[in-house]
Length: 71
Image (cartoon, rainbow, N blue to C red):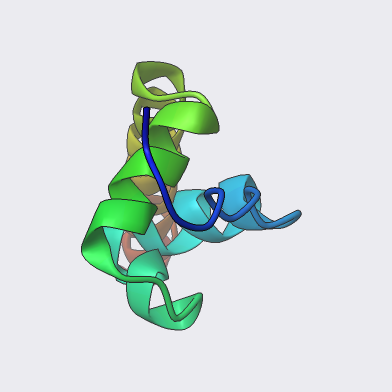
């Protein structure tokens, strides 16, 4: 049995911030590494990481399309 304070709840906007900032969300949200890793797991784990990856890929594709228009 663990002693001490109960773990902090997952911040309301955690998923949104993680999807936009990835692992930099740790600093944006002011979390320490163990709490951040636990929160990623509690907020969706691999599914949340997949959503982040899709977000980043979508932004890259969008920027390529915008860049191609300027040619």
